[in-house]
Image (cartoon, rainbow over all chains, first blue to last red):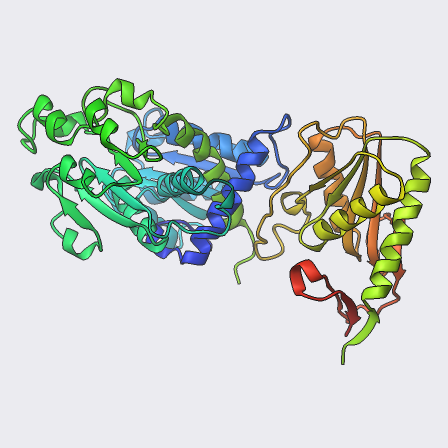
Length: 313
Length: 174
């Protein structure tokens, strides 16, 4: 594995291997000395053409925990704002000796383009490209599910038989896409719940079930409910009538949380709109894995950086 | 053709002797922790801990120490899978750590293990026990307890099988 662009590229064995290494990195994160010498002398370039706080910080923490040097480039305050092309920016990073390029871009497909362009020899990790994919988010989500649902027996296992509901703006969500491909690979069954306007047009080819209300999806007694952020910028675009209507039909309210079985978990990739897609008391409840997801995110990204490192066979 | 160099009774005897040597070298000190290096070192560590506890009843802890992320060939080899590290909750500070592995060859695994231990704490003493020493060291490292010294050629393969993983106890060379 040279690059990580899409969870579609991961075999089941590769995906489970990444989850197992993530578990080992979680143990390292719990030590007094949290640093490993693994990537000493290597440089990870975080290239963020689109705003992000947690993903950028998480990749930085992961790279530093592996003793890599980190340089961060954001569109604001760089030559990108002066109109430098993507190719020139990346070749500059290459010339500065970047071994890994962690790339976020508002356009779908940019990470794949960079990985196959020949502009750089670096490992390319997709940190979110438009509405396409966000593979490390899916890995940390799958790891969080596996830890909560299978506990100590999780090592080497997939998510076979797990019933996962993803609710929210599926159509515009790279988190949903990466999760669906990975969850399919790991043997989970996925139900997408969203208003028709927020379901992707080609959803019949995704290998998932769909529900037009969250209540209907919850009738299936899910193990996991993953709520997605409603992007405020979509609010005025007529995808749904109002915030209160969204919350009524698709929000993870306290009443809906009470319907779930005891072991079920509620996930959110953050940042949350409390009271809109998830009620505040649900986000703070024992079911919620929100802070666990952030914690696991650093470990999952360490696992990805490490796994890409070896000589390609 | 694989040649069998240690049978099950040979392995049992070698481990029992190492157990006695460890007890003797402890000279009454307590706080013994066996840390096995995955995969087969883990099971040898468990066996040695049992043997030592039988020889001289005492608290003996067992753990596993994964050294994958501390290796010096990460950039040169294809990616190795990591394994869990599991250290007793009380930590390793002030203890005697006996590192355990199946084969001692270049010494690079032990070098990585010493780095890994440093990140976990500061034992009073670290010693190294190995079932087979096949020579060809690339670093100034030696074992404190050796089951069998096995002179080997560089192009030979030493294969350790243990019941817990492989269904049988046997060391062969090919």
